[in-house]
Amino acid sequence: MKRRAFIQQTAMASAALVATKYAGAMTQSSDFPVVRVGAGFRKFSSPAVENLIADIKKNIGNKEIAWLFENCFPNTLDTTVTFEMIDGKPDTYVITGDIDAMWLRDSSAQVWPYIPLCKTDKALQQLIQGVIHRQAKCIIKDPYANAFYKDETKESEWEKTDITDMKPGIHERKWEVDSLCYPIRLSYGYWKQTGDATPFDAHWLSAMKLVVQTFKTQQRFEGKGPYSFQRKTAWATDGVPLGGYGYPNKPNGLICSMFRPSDDATIYPYLIPSNYFAYRSLQQLSEMAAALHSNELAASAAALSAQVKKALDAYAKAHHATYGDIIAFETNGYGSYNLMDDANVPSLLSLPYLGAMAATDPLYKNTRRYVLSSENPFYFKGAAGQGIGGPHTGLDYIWPISITMQGLTSTDEKEIKACVDMLQRVHAGTGFMHESFHKDDASKFSRKWFAWANTLFGEFIWKVYREHPQLLA
Image (cartoon, rainbow, N blue to C red):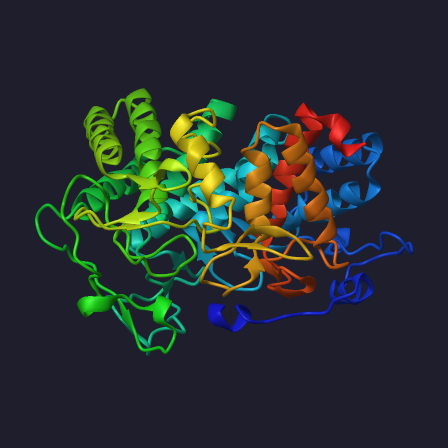
């Protein structure tokens, strides 16, 4: 199925209809019907996840939020993972939901909230080990690809439309800096939480060396590099101009990204949120490599991180007439800037969540005020809600991920509560989060089954439960 087929899809879905969709659905109540996949139909079951669900259902007064958490938090495990042992090592393939392919970004984000539960659930820990192993395989197959198939011989549905170096087993070959950052973030988070270094073998180290090499190549100090991409399509954001290499950039230490985490083409090749993510991820990789006694990798990752950060300090900032100095979304090194933000992560809004910038940093605070205002061309406000969308789903469609991210990065209880309340209102009776919804009518939404949005919502509610439980009363 083609991703674009879901972009303009809208649905009027009652909870009862969704319950019918899930063959495992059991009994229903009139208020909160059972829409979660039945136990016998789930892809993976975690006692630690089930215990957390039971704890939250028991202890918070907002029963609708408890119901949403029960449906959304385990959605990745319930519906998207395939676990097996391959050559004596765990291997986990993770689809996005309604698209049967594994994105490096989405798969990392989908399992990320489960990492703190690994200490009490060894099977869950092994599942995440399997994601790390699978991602290393994908990177070694092609570091420029963003999405892969489980069947490594399968040819892509894009084979006849994409002009790029396509290989069997690759679903899509859109070069996105964040695609190589997310596996580092997942590995680092797993390592810090568990203390377990067994997934970080010679194969993983080879993948990480390729990450650093690819980032250096896409700094483009020595030419455009080997990657180019064009697509035969009428959808402008699906192709890269000027022979597939993008608009010109002036090399300055930043890393070129031909696509955003939305899988939309960049306008200017230096995508600033992704470069902040790369700076932080390379720091994490350096720390891990040093602990693994891979000293050359540790040194090269640290040096590249410092180079990217220096370039960010010099080139990422723009001046806005209302909000003062803010971080640009994209730039080209020649002095041109694209001021906006997109719902997908990494975004400017998400920088504290990714550990790339403190929420108290004055530059971030100015930027946050900007991206959550009507000055951001992709900030929409209507009768159903308000938040950030993006070109991927078109005008007036807000992404629940952006509302969730606003809550995750906020230090203001009133703002956090407003985000919880809004997310509670926009699931359109389905019991799940969606890719996007219309600002004036939440029953018009794209992608019923989008596991990243579901799991991230669960992460947010769990954080609120730990830190601000009174907001869930």
